[in-house]
Image (cartoon, rainbow, N blue to C red; front, side, top):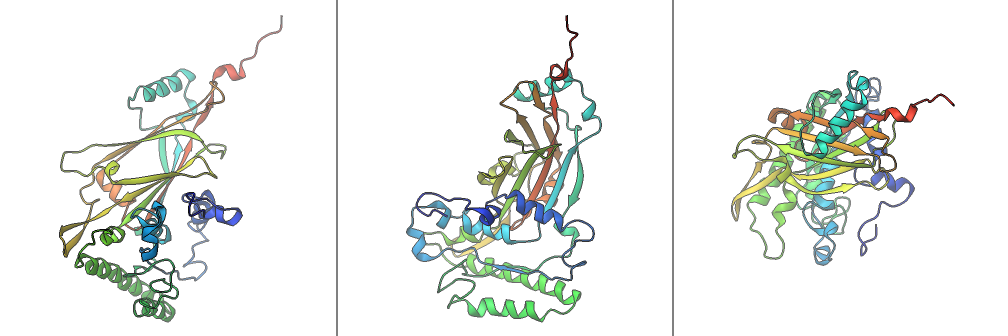
Length: 351
């Protein structure tokens, strides 16, 4: 990473660490397949104890990635949590039978900011974290990624918080104990947030923000041949009444992957502390989330003879809550239908 020039994806293996890495998504997908389950098929029990804080000395560095909430620290919590959600969208058989005129009309409608039909794409796979065995996840109080004082590996000031978690993980010998640890570690996260809620903020640094739950929402766009859709726009449209929370209002930042230009990652602040200073309570912003449409339009800038069928998916408030949770990642894998204009294959008799 280039500290004073922004951040970089790195080279070779570090490419897989860039936010929204396509290689990492494929790795996660692999272990969702029948016969490749980490716990059921390989007998491996995974754990994630993580910190969301930054070192005091780094708070003065003028690089947002290092020190602000919704940066490396808060995003790392959802990225490290292996209780992720995965959805794959594919074109319906009817979509492949569309005539050029219908395709052009759909594209024109999107360009005019009009809604397109929601039935051209369907959910081929939905793998929710709530349907799998929970992997223990703990947000550790006053713990950072590195450092001699609060680093998770060797910090002096947090050994009494980190080492008991390690001992718990090493002592697990059955599936029942594994589930018990998952519940116990959830209580660790809850206790961490309660403790921070009782602390008063600081004028130059509001420590509460980095303990609020954040989520990653990743969209990866490929065509039916597996090639990335590199030019696209993605629009969120929330409905509902005035008392509903719009997903758009939870977005803190986004990142377009530089190694796979068809991948975009949104950082969402899905929890918020509320109350008086010294007596703050964590609240779930998804509890009153509004129903949502998301729309995707792909472009082929090198040719007007190639077009992508626009995507429109409608989600109820309950479906949004099933797909997105604090401290978790949601991956939406979209196979966009790429179709040629009829002139591409037009044959003419030679004179």
